[in-house]
Structure formats: C-alpha cells, structure tokens
Length: 423
Image (cartoon, rainbow, N blue to C red; front, side, top):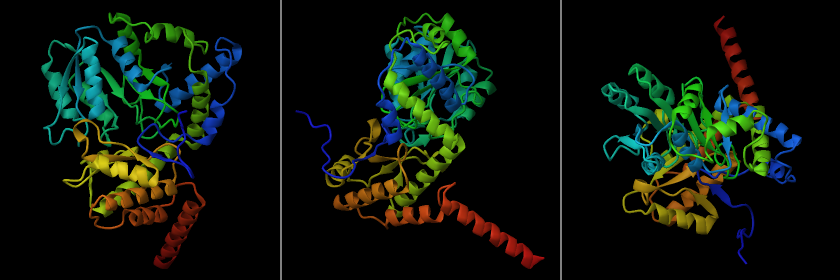
C-alpha cells in the first residue's frame, strides 16, 4: 500500500514556489459534502466565487474558472483569442515563458521569442523597450498578441506589466496583451484592468493557497471580441458557453465543487486581510529571505533588485556545487522541500518559496534547513543567513501585529518629543 504521509513527526516543510502550503481553514472548507452542481445552492456559490475572483484580479470584467491546471488556462488564452498561423510576440524570461512558447507552436501559432543574451535572459525581466521596438517594425500588424510572464516562477523575477502595456501603446499597435500571472496572483500586486491586460492567466496552487486543480482566464472586452473572430478549434476551453452558464452561477460541464468551496474560503481570507496587506506581507517575507542569501554570500538568481519576486527567491549555488544535491540533502535530513532549478538553471540554483500558509518562523526554520544543508554539502558561507533574517523580522514586525503597533507608538512618541525639544 502506498504511504502518502511518510513524515513520522512534525509537519513537512513545503517551501517550493507552488503548490503552496494550504491553510487548515481552506482544508476544512473543502471537506464539506459535495452538492448538486445544478441545484440552487451551487448557483449561489458560483456567483459568489465569480464575483470574488474579480476583486483578486482587480477587474470588473468576466473571469473564467476552469477545472484544470495553469497549463490548461495557457491553452485557453491562446485558443480563444488567436487563429492558426497567427504571429505572436513572446519574451524569454525563464522556463515557463519557454513552455508557453512551445504550446503556441503545438497549436499552430507562430511565436517570435525575444530575449536578452544567453547569460542574462533568465536573470532579468521582460524588456518593454525591445517589445516596443519590434512592434514598431510590424507595419502590417501581423503580430496579434504579446504574451509575457508576470512572475517567472523558475527565476524569481517579477516583470513590470504596466510598462509592457505602455510599450504596446507607444508603438500604436493593436496587439492583445496576454499575461501569465500563475504564481503572481494574490501574492504580488496585479491589476488586470488598470494595466490594460486582455487575458490574465492564473492557477489555484500559488497565492490563492489552494491545491492544484483550478485555473483562470480574466478577460477584457477586446479579448472577448477577438474570441468571436478566432478560428482555432476548441471545445472544453471555449469562453462563450462558459460565460453564458456563469451568468447564473453555473458551468456547462461538471466543475470542481470542493475546490470551489476552498476558493470561496481563500477569497474570504484574502479580502478580509486586504490585498495591500497581502502584498506587503509577501514583500516583507521576500526581503527577509534575501537578507539571508546575502548574508550567506551567495547570488540571487534575479539580477534586477527592482524586480525581485515577493513569491520566491532563486539561490545560485557556487561553481562546482550541484544545487540538486543540496536540495536532496536538505530534503533527506530536514524534511524540507525546495524548488529545483528548471531548464537552463537546472543544477545551478534552488528556489525558496515564501507564499501560502507561511509565517516568520516558518521561513526562519526553512532558512535554518537551507543553511545546514549548504554546509553539509561543503558550501563555505560568509555568515549566518538565519541570524540576518531573524534580525530583519525582529526589527520590522509584520504590519497590524501588536509588535508593529507598539513600534509605531514609540516612533510617534519619539517624533513628538523631538518636536517639543525643537520648539
């Protein structure tokens, strides 16, 4: 018999950048009995989650929910808006941008892959200027869409999507903007409407804190109009039937009822906390982890500090050190899972996720396992990353906590006293 839980004591530390640890509150919601997906109770659930997910994407336009992984939502975005033979412009930022390009090829689309030189392409974000320059050359408007990854999970780089939209507009080009925010949504700031995105692609297993199994297409009116012209064969992914059924809270096929229970709970948790607070929480965790990596004297995969991901941090191992061996050692010795290097980065780096059901001490323990594992694998560390992260978290308490309120009160009192002295 297969043992699914092989951890004898304590909890396994799942610190990969997705699937992320699922909060108990969501697990309990998912354990509710399955209901009739054609009954009135389900219709109420459907309308609630469809309205709630719009708030997470920060859109007033429809959001499609699929019983699928993010890969399915990739295909849905392409197959609903494009036709066989269409040219699209994509940008190489890492493994997942590359996989999306490969999918476009399989669908008979003609992707053009912009990139930086090989040594830089997986360490920087999307370059809006290169997109603008290429679109300006496309006088006949053959390019029908620009497809980019918001938070590249393989590298820990969060690209500036608003700048990509400005580049398309500056070129006065009618191309659609399709964005993969599978790992960015609900962890990093993302604004579908404000940034002029036509299709946003996302999944359940990252910032939404759910198990894998549901994915999303957030739409714009321009994207819906394009879907009516598309000649790409599609059945399951077709937006029109789903949008018609969604009007009353239903789907044209059997949806993932219990995952929708979980989504409903996740939306409540995120909106109760407030999106700004959610984003600040992830930014703070990311900074704490990066302080640790810097203290170790190791490189961060992302070389643009302004684009550091709040979702994960890629850690480059020194020359001659197999990052996968470091990961295996940490897993075997400390029951801690870290993200592997993918594609061009395989064996050269590992990834620490800081999202999902996390807190400061979760990350301190994670960094402790990393620090010990690196030493066991013969990596000479400059200093203690654990101490650096401890110091950062102690000096910068999480907003809204009693410690943060006390600190704010002390600082306010200090300013008042200083003002009195000056007066």
